[in-house]
Image 1 (tube, one colour):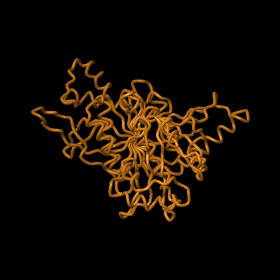
Image 2 (spheres, helix red, strand yellow):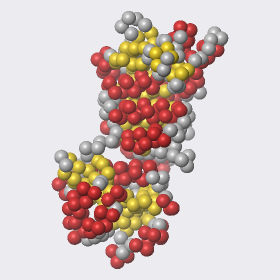
Image 3 (cartoon, one colour):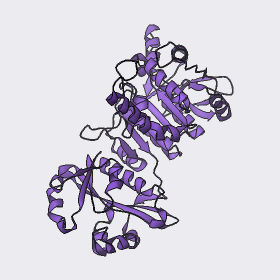
Image 4 (cartoon, helix red, strand yellow):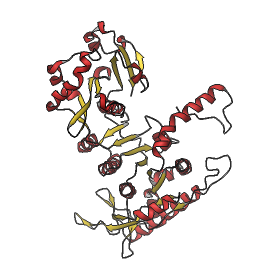
Length: 449
């Protein structure tokens, strides 16, 4: 867990100092990986309404100080509603989208302008003994978003409601290269000088795609995506997102955020996140800790990492037979591989399979076994074993499992370095205990997901 001293003073005991150093060293790989990368961070007006703006700005300032280039996009839905109430004007929606008449457009301009000023003021803070001390962050805004009208849909005229048409990429890049934070409102403009009311999600997703951002992060009023048991799904693939959306069981807000994340990932944004703004430091926890605090949607790279099919049995046998021969793996044979082929995931390049792993689920105990983790010798050291492990962990989470285990005789240190802890045979599902060849004296390692 991150070190969090009770006061601004330095830790004054050896344990606290060691904890701080360990944490700081643990986040170093993330700092190196994300330096100079673009993050698009978007939040709804509900976050401002909840009084979370200052802490979010402090976190964004820290990301910027670490060399990450940041675009901030804000929403203003509740603020527009408040302006409409003050003017005794009606709020109208159709199919979940706001209809923006003349009065509503003026309310959107006023609400957006007020929030923009609040954000700029928050970035201008520099009080001593606060996270903003010595920050000196410049904020740049402008007419970076060209919009077009939604028009008439299903016989309904959306009037001044629009969608993103074009992003001024070069101008935004210039601002980011000057070390500024770019701030965008949910308003766009047409070449004829018209203003359009846009959705925060559309603006943020369009910007992330146009800039080829490393991450699209939504700070949301919801905890993320939860499964049927109400448990948070921490990682989910494009394929699973499509299946989940197709069920129609998601709440409207969750579906909107998830659709935006999917759209971004399909357009080559590697990661999109939904994290609750109710958690202090949510953006930092999501970026700099392994598990994060919300839901991450990851882009599927079907060319390289995919689920195995019947045509892959021969290639998997070729992979694992040398390790079966030297005793590293338990001999399985073609019949077992054919029977269990749906449990396997593989990595391939140019139609050559050079890595595999299998997940065998034990739903009653909410455990899964990762078996047959294999990478060809000439491809080892390239991170493919790590990729397979992450993929198996993701599959396990999607199946509702909360622990995975491995049985190994020679690779204990590899698993220990990746968060597994030693367990015992007695901690395994009874069905697995009965099937184990105890003469191999395999060691058990378990990881909490």
